[in-house]
Picture 1 (cartoon, one colour):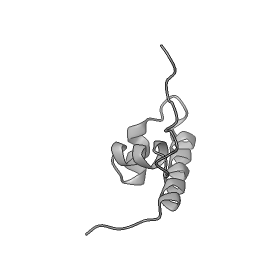
Picture 2 (cartoon, helix red, strand yellow):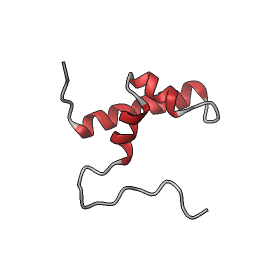
Picture 3 (tube, helix red, strand yellow):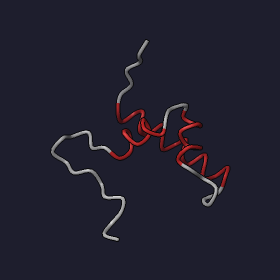
Picture 4 (cartoon, helix red, strand yellow):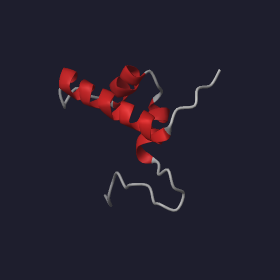
Length: 67
């Protein structure tokens, strides 16, 4: 069974859990996997909520600039 959760609400929950991981583990030890585990979601799901625009005409944020 699938659950429908409002995008912004879920995004906020993920950010709150991420903050908890940073507080508990420290900046150096915090990982995407630990955040996903705390949220009980996959890393891919976490990425979709945090880095994809909810509007198709908005560009995705750039994580890496020219190397």
